[in-house]
Amino acid sequence: MNVKELCLGALTFGDASGYDLKKFFETTFSQFCSAGFGSIYPALAELTAEGLVSCEQHSQEGKPDRKLYHLTAAGRKVFLRALQAASPVHRVKSDFLLALYFAHLLPPAHLQSLIDGRIAELDRHMQLITESEAAPDTQRKYSAGSQFVRGYGKAVMRAARDYLCARRQTLITSARTVKSKPFKPALRNGASRAHHQQY
Image 1: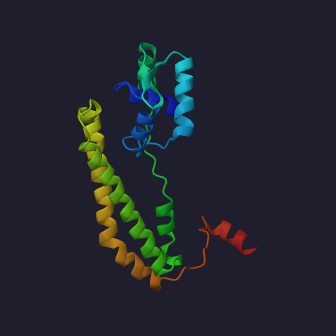
Image 2: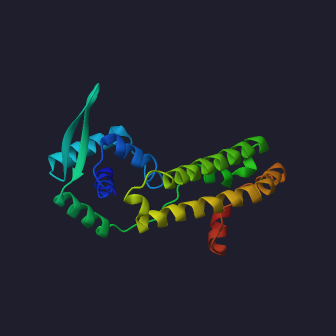
Image 3: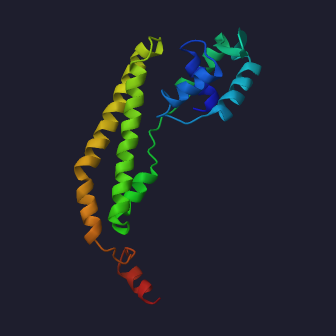
């Protein structure tokens, strides 16, 4: 889903300001996508122009007016269509795992630093989930889907953390001793081997 559709989804839980939506993306949606003010506010402007959300301004003493966005009936229909039309694919793209794949080429101290950093990052994400669970009562806090996804996220992160803690020393030790071998492409048959040897 794109940012516009995710803004519609967030608004199904109730009216929100742009800042509220930014915090929602930074916490609840942080495991799904990343979006900042630079993408959320243009998305809200387009959604308002399309009649998918409405916007009301509320006066604040000593502060700029607060814009509160409300999901319209048309916006709800668009989001439900997008939700049901999606073919969800779970993608894991990790520079961290890519670096560990080449652990045998990294200095042990650097490898240790990478793993420690990833463990700290997992701890931060789990803390964010814990804080969201302790936040003031909201409709989204108690939705079955919200509870399921938070539980899933914590289970996956705990498993990753446990694996890193249990296996990091083995990886670091092997990185000290394993030497990379020259790469030799696999040859399919004798004919291709003979052809390869000509060059």
